[in-house]
Structures are given as C-alpha cells and as structure tokens.
Length: 300
Ligand code: IPD
Image: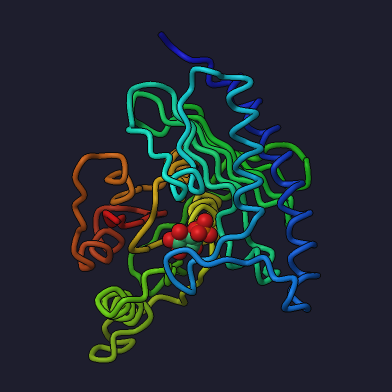
C-alpha cells in the first residue's frame, strides 16, 4: 500500500491553520490571566521549567480528532497523549507525530515564537512535515523527495532555502542555535554549558582558535530552529534532548532544504548514539559545505 502524500499535505496545512487559531486564542487568554495569580492556568510537568497549559492539551485534542475523522487507520503519537500515558509503539503504519505547541515557554511568556509541529512517519521514517507559527503567520512544509517551502502571510510558497547556501569553512562564519531544554540536572547542565562555551568562544583558544561562532541563538522551539536552518537564517542547530514530536516535521523540512540532520534520526531508531561534541565542529569545518543541522537526541 502507498499513501497519497500530496493530499495528506493539503489536509495537514489546513489542520495547522485551524490549530494556529486556537493557539492565538490561548495566547491572548494566558497573557490576560498572567496578571492575576488566581487565574493562572500554567502547569509544570517534570520540573519547574517544563511547562504545560490547557491549550497544549486542547490543541492536541483538536488535531487528534480531525486526523482520526479523516484517516481512521492512521496511528497517532502526540506530546500530550504521551504524557498522559498513550504511547503506541512505532510500526510501519502511517503515524502522525505531533507537538501541539512547540515552544510552550515562549507561548506562556508572550514571546511570539511558538508553533504547531505536525509530522508524518511512514515505514518508520519521517516523510511529511508542517510547522506553523501563527504569531508571525509563517508556515513551513515539506514532503520527502519533493522539496520544502515557506508560506509567509498566506503568500506564494517559496522554496527552501530562500537563498543559495552559504559556503562555510569555519564555525567562525556561523550563527548557531542551541537550546537549554528542560533537563537542568547537574550532568546535563554541565555538558550543555561547556558545549555552549565551546561554540561561543573557547577560553583557551579565543578568536585565534578560529572556532568561535558569530553568535548563538535560541528560538525556544526545536521545530522553529529546524525551520530557520532550512530557511538559511541559521547555519546550525545543536541540542541535547529532543523528543520525536519536536523534530519529526523539522527533519523532513530541513533535509529537503539540503540540510544534514544527524542524531535526531536516532529518535526513530531502537538505540541512540550520541556523537562526541567534537564531531559537530568537524562536520562544519570539513566535509560539509553549508547548512548543517545537528540535533543530538537523548533517550529519555
Ligand atoms: C521544547 C522546545 C524547546 C526544546 C525542548 C522541547 P515544548 O518543546 O522545543 O525549545 O529545547 O527540548 O521539548 O515543550 O515547548 O513542546
């Protein structure tokens, strides 16, 4: 059996826009309630920086319902369903992999970088992705083998990357994205901190080391980091600790824009290899000509 990815994409784009309306409505409500402690609806998951709101759950319920109405045989993996204990094993069947609000911290704080990330996995590989930031009205989409595109303000789709790829020969020519993630335990924070230091400037080598990036950025959403590398505004994204729903859509969109994705692929495999940090810089400094996405997944 094969699946009609073009018609699934049309459905998924319209679903993303419907979800986006609810995300915007939620943002308004949460910003208003934030001024009144008794009204606060922001909850915590595994720790005080792992946030969830009623809108994460409502958006996921909306998309899950619409997906099952249209594709009753598809499987569904979603961030909030997973949290609530629904953890279907990955099979060869078409499976939507959804983060209803990626960038929940931004969403809660009114920082307008949050999106819905809708990925489709088929035969255990990500094959279709839609990432929609309703605050900026930027919608990214891609189908494996058919390119990826950005639609801004409902205009014409523009093929990604938007401009010819840069030819980077050194980290010192790059702007990179990193994220703190929600794991702030001592091992994780030490390894993240030392990675950021090495990316931003090795104190031992300084600029002479030639490895200091122009700067580091954090979009606050794994999916939007992927999308921005695909677009060409970032040269690389590196993170420890992504979940499948954070990266599924982004993998398709970035790879179709000519990016190299490593590590995240492991999210879909049985075992996870976490390459040494040195490999990241080597990959930019040698072999690869341009855009590199590097998201390193962990197992938790
Ligand atoms: C998180 C965001 C964040 C990244 C985390 C993700 P959420 O997703 O993408 O930028 O650092 O690893 O889990 O919780 O906002 O859906």
